Length: 130
Image (cartoon, rainbow, N blue to C red):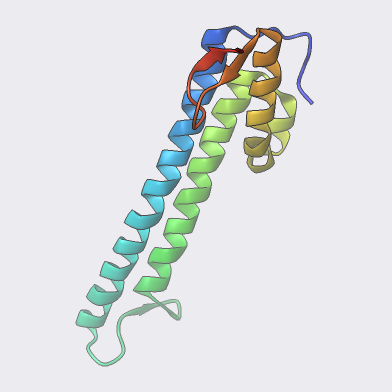
């Protein structure tokens, strides 16, 4: 799956693992913040027009907030996926970024094994194989 002619250093692989951790933390921070903002938008929309709430293009402000949360989550994942593809120089991740996120762990482990290393807990820094 990866380009075997492209040797990676430990520093490059650790940078890729840092990007993976950043993506996971970003996802887990965007989701709750987005849903809290959607709830606040729903409450504010209801205060503007008391009995039914404020509607834009047939949808309430809460629905728009959830939609924007989903869009922000996808954009963040694509952004991190393109950074991962650039760091790994893997053409598969460029073509299919969201699928490539799942391949990243395999590619890093495969390349680290060639250096007699393995990833730490929760995509932590590389450690020597015991």
